[in-house]
Image 1 (cartoon, rainbow over the protein chains, first blue to last red):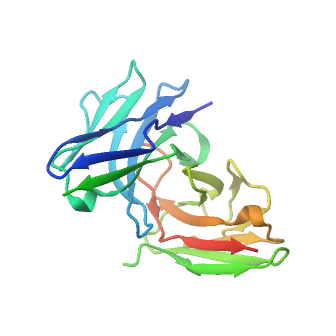
Image 2 (image 1 turned 180 degrees about the vertical axis):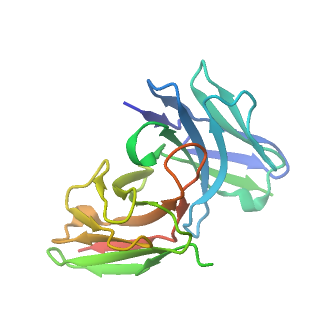
Length: 116
Length: 114
């Protein structure tokens, strides 16, 4: 069964430094996609970045990059030059391409706190 | 362009009462989803729909029913609320269920059952 594991319940980072949020996944499918979402204290879910299982290059979106290591089944989110506004919960999620409905399976989340 | 909206934002119910949560999207998305979020457990899928008139069960469907009579609306019903259904409920929609199409989320509904 597909599963997402985020082993860091909470993380602290100094403003302007880089931080890596860990995500490992388990699936028997060859075709899948990995997503990261941000949830600030206001509660909304904000899409950050996507990586497909067949993408050869790591995805990047501005200050966000996804360190995709397929053999290790890991999809870590790297935030460069942290800002105070990056303080939030971060969720890793996976979609198996051929599962009906495009369902997302979410990890438990990591709470990131950026210190000034 | 409002995206995904949810009504109501907050609700308190007594055990055994019923209610319906409304989700509306104006992006002409085919796929719609209902999730619940509990502390320390991330989001779990309750029900989903791949098009108007279709619904299917997700990971935690017991105690909930859904309907998608119009493409833009997805309703989540609680027939007899229980304290275990105290949670934050999120609706989401997507163009497609494959590839990199992300799900767009509504602002959430905070439900307390006493």
